[in-house]
Image (cartoon, rainbow, N blue to C red; front, side, top):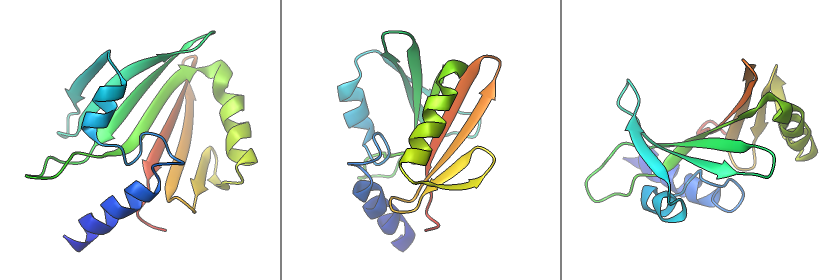
Length: 135
C-alpha cells in the first residue's frame, strides 16, 4: 500500500510536465471526445484517441493502473504512434530537454521519473513514455 501511495504522489508531481502521465481516466475521457477503451492480453485497461496535426495524425494510447475500489485509475504509460518522419523531431526534443540517453533510443527524465523509448518500424515512429518508479 505504501508503494501505491508513493506511486500516486509521484505521478501527480509529473502532471504539469508529462502530459497524460498521472492523469485520471475520467480526465482523459473528458478531454478527448472520440476515444476507445480496450484491454491488453494481460488485462491492462487503456484508452486510445487520435490527435490531428496539420501534416499527420498522432495515435495515443494511455495505459491505466488497475481498478481499485474507491480509487481513480491513473495513466502510468503513454504510447504515441506517428509517421517515422517525426523520429528526428523526438530525438532533438529529448536531447534539447537534457534528458539522459541511457542506450540506443532510450532516454530518462530523472527529474520527473519518466522513461522514453523510441521504436521505428514499418514507416511508423512509436514513442513510449512510462513512469519509472526507480529514481
